[in-house]
Image 1 (cartoon, rainbow, N blue to C red):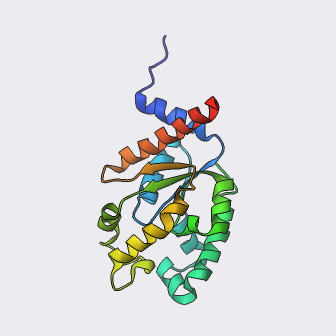
Image 2: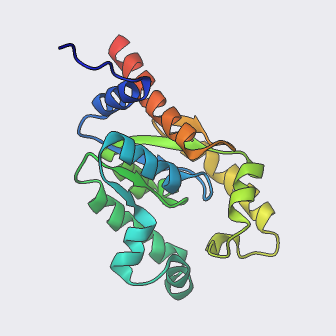
Image 3: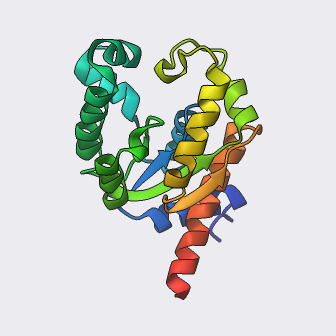
Amino acid sequence: MSEPLLTVADSLKDRARAALGSRNLILVGLMGAGKSAVGRIVASQLGIPFIDSDHEIERVSRMTIPELFAAYGEDEFRALETRVMKRLLKGGPRVVSTGGGAFINERTRRHIIKGGVSVWLKADLDVLWERVNKRDNRPLLKTENPKQTLEGLMNARYPIYAQADLTVLSRDVRKEIMADEVLKAMIEAQKESAAS
């Protein structure tokens, strides 16, 4: 009997899984970029665990992110985030979605760079705004003009996110398409690395 033919999707998953090896895949980017939604799908496709770092922070602190910000401020939240990320990235492989500010913190960014392959889900302002303005759980957007605040965060953070290993454009398409694009970016990066 002949072996069954691999579908294009199976081949993509297998090649991406091989490209990742035992490393972690860490999704970075602004709030609303799709890190958690896309990350869950990527993890499922690769057959590895998915961890949302914000959920892990909430679990260990027994507080929500807005409660942490209100009670302790952003600096203390970032210190906790760094400790949690350091712990999460010790094992692998897994897919980890980060909070929007995680990669901005230099100490956390070093852990991410050391801990695996970082992928920036880059989105334009209109896409981000459409996704985040429906919720009231974004502490950094509790301002007089939240869209302007979001734009300011983009201007400040995008040069830092650009330090990620890979960049995938997050846009208004199905999450499954975005997940496939993350897998393709991993495969392409491995090809380029092998060629050099």
